[in-house]
Length: 377
Ligand code: GDP
Ligand code: MN
Image: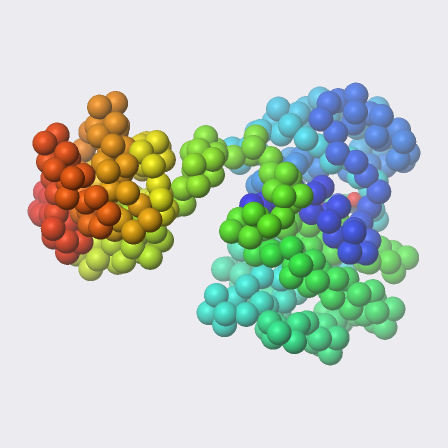
């Protein structure tokens, strides 16, 4: 789950990271009121899940409350990379001497956290890491020992910070790491981390991404979700606890469990077939969830559908009911093959065959059935 800048900044402020004074607004008059209270120049910042707002017109500097009001009129309702602006963060404007990028994420290859800095700010980290990895300085962090002061000092030296700046940076980096750990984050980045002309270090923009699978233990964080920033598909998947990932291929791949779904994807790939999506409707799914999973899968307009179920916690009868409901409501309008084993499979298979669906005896057979239809046509 992504957090908005204002939410991220507020969390970091609780850890002692300096942030500008400011407040979030949902109406033009709110913007005016906040700007008046802050006095002087303010920055209006569109709160959308998209990055690179600066270039897209989502970050505007206002000289006073009048101009802030005028700019807010233009910004509310504006579209930024597919996201509609409904909240604006009004921050006091900060004068900038230098800008940096500071981020922490989990390196999947090293299987440990990694802290990163760059003197290239103002560019999305993902973009930076992909296009010019040499501009990012990375230090792996031992997951049990945690981030060590000497490691942060190493980063500071690399950023060519002086003593006063280094002292502030060490504090901020250690606290950012603590926030990352304590809140089960997948990503914590400050971009830009700036040095003001008077030498003070401030976070001017933060982006935190929380691990959805850890949210159940943190109701306080779950409440920060902004449903207006989700696509209808993402919302549906979350409400029904379905793991849905859109992919570029042509076959929908549904399974009850991520492992089974991944194996099925791999087997399709071995036949030269790419999946249109990865849909894991999880253990113990009932008919309604299966039906919803099929709706999500079909929205990608696949040429065929493969449903792979191993009923342990999942009652195959329920899965069959979901599939039949999808058939009745014409959600399933392309060739479908079902592989089904486990709890109540015999009964469920019978019902599916009666309704004209194709059953495969094994995953291998299901994949071959798909291959015969996709590769050879
Ligand atoms: P992003 O483009 O979505 O990452 O939005 P940011 O909040 O990072 O803002 C983009 C850029 O706008 C920053 O890198 C700064 O250069 C500039 N900016 C943001 N806030 C201020 C501010 O208070 N004062 C000044 N002078 N520039 C700012
Ligand atoms: Mn930024």
